Length: 252
Image 1 (tube, rainbow, N blue to C red):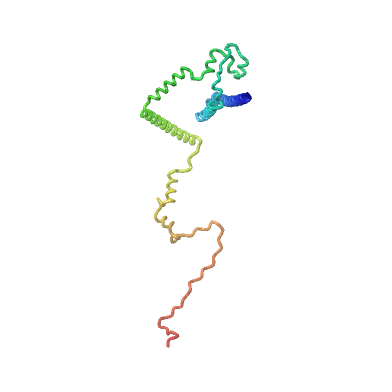
Image 2 (cartoon, rainbow, N blue to C red; image 1 turned 90 degrees about the vertical axis):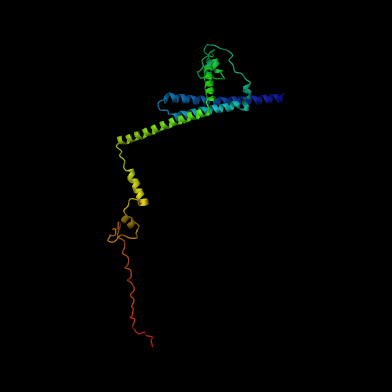
């Protein structure tokens, strides 16, 4: 008997912990939905597509986490429980208003099917089946052709946008009075001349490659203070060459 009571208490604690985790995840999902709705209502003129996708990714993450909790083994007791309204009424229920934060004022006959629905609405489910059937009957070659055509259209639109952006930036620079300070052609010619010598005259190239300045060229004046004068190098050693007919001192 005690063993049964202990097992039952443990299952109840696990069920309470699972329900609390589900409630926390649902509250996170609710806050994310509220943030997205507020952003769409207040920033509908400035919001861009990447920002919307980031907010939608947050919703997807909360839904994925909620699905993992419901599919876990600890949530298995919840699958054997049934939730249903005990009383339907069109009168305002203050307790229900407080629990739903003012979203559901009364548990009416029209509202209960939507709250307890586990499948999409019949109209949405029918349209989804039509789309699935159309996608399944589409051949691989046809799908590849449509993808290639769509990629071509996207590439063409991208080129138009890029060209428009370049024109707009050029007009902005001209309107602001910002004139270009360099010429691309001259820059390339200068880099080519320095790197390969292209465009230089042969005389100038030889002078640049030689060891010293050309004849008649003056040395450049020093830019800084005058350097101290170096000592004069010694003159060449003079040799006394005797005549060939001179008598050798050791000749007998």
